[in-house]
Image (cartoon, rainbow over all chains, first blue to last red; front, side):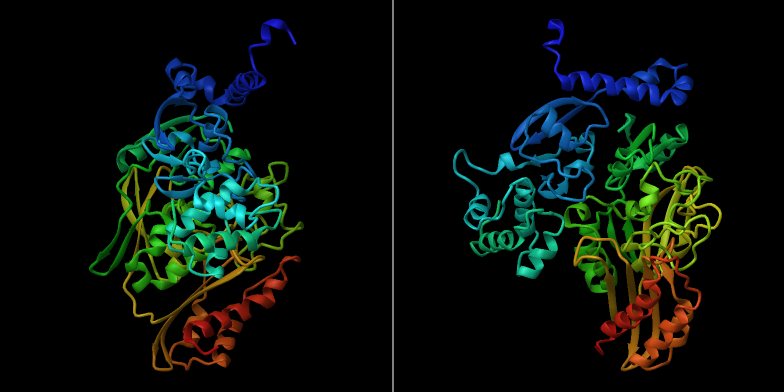
Length: 201
Length: 326
């Protein structure tokens, strides 16, 4: 690699090249819009975005196309939230927005202006794990662990919503979180235990 | 995802104006389907108009029914006491759809606007008349296990994937629409359309229009059931679903509305079966006869032939569960 390029990460390079690719792909529409430079500028404008993540206020700028998931992982390096399918089918990216669980891969970051986000990083109190995290460890609610942050965020919401009253109800309301290792029975055990302990986030 | 211009609309008029200024733009509400389609390159709007700030989130009782705003969230409508008590069929349909996370994002209007989940529509390397008019239909001779058995054309055999819409069709809902030419209302069953030779059009919304809400008239349906048959116990699109709402006078059917999902390009009302059942007793035999009538125009395309057997059983079963004679 050229010495001068050392400071430019592969990620930055990719960002730039995809912006150029987008410009090329969008060119027919843009030729017309090109009559108005303001519109081209608007297309690539980074939008100011204020949100609160795990109790901390952030003032950011993002491209419109950046999802909440990519903002968390790529821009803020909160990599606890996982990217599984990136199409809303697996639940690995589950976070809480204003207390409600959502798939962060299907939410544009800019659509979350002024909202309060909680990710898996926001659960523990220093070194003291959240009771749901403890319960997942105690009941062996995972093998590879990739789906676990999403499972835990979803499990907390499941209890808060009042949908953790039986094993069947938990299974139904946790169906948006896929575990390819098949730790489901243990996940249900963990959720039930926290529910019975009357503990939630 | 190809980048786009993002703007927030503060009123219905501002949203309609913003779309009129950019015909290749789209409204975005929950985004659960649109962002998915944009990531896959199925659609690439040059402008997204965020309508989440519009005051269309209400679920309120009116003199003749209930008025649900287009931006009401699926999970909130589903668990709303008014809905649970007066329109349990709608609550059941919501609960059967998607996952808890997606229901927390998806709006009522967005649910109506979601596109088919036909894999040929999603796969941009395949022909699809809905995605690219004139390119052909990959499903017609292809893997069509999930596809339509009613009202399809040789241009498209895709199905509409919604559960909510099936219940709203059964409940005789009305859609409120706003657009450059003013406001209008249409019956819910006229909102979605059959593919015919224009499968690129999912619905009858005109250029520049926006859904503002849904009205459901009061009813006396005291027996309701939403039966959904799918490949796994939860979080899957319907192979077949049946929304059944009955007004019973002891064991005689005074009124019955039935709609099916997963079988057509739109929620499929079964008016002939409904007519047959009015005034009859709630028995397995009558329900089976009604189901037979409902299946008269059904047609399979190969992999989905099993639906021809499954559908009448599902209709009968849903009516039996609703009336409690199982």
